Image (cartoon, rainbow, N blue to C red):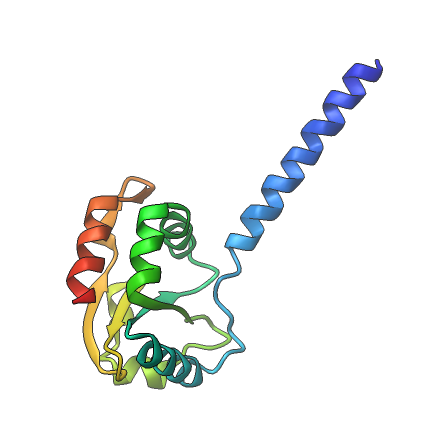
Length: 155
């Protein structure tokens, strides 16, 4: 009986730990942040570091937004590509904060659906908008397609 209880307790602890990790992945967008200030800070950082800015527009309500972030941040090669070339920003779009003025300035990239990538140069100038539906593969993403997008927009 003790073995059984210990096994059940261990399984519950593992389930809770996995659930807590999943919850953390679901909180990558912050609706209380002013998007224009967030982007200005990213552009400033990009200038200092000689990088571009990669903006992932979406929300914590969007399962593919969370999946995309988790996919690229847990794949060591993709993460390195992003870290080496970009300041990576998650711009919130939700009922609490749609960041409409900023998105309008970029030509409303949200019309492509969510998530959507917005690439900026080190001066904050829009260089590309990339819808991400074509980068999907089943319930996840295609690594080769992501690598190509990151390479093409880094140079």
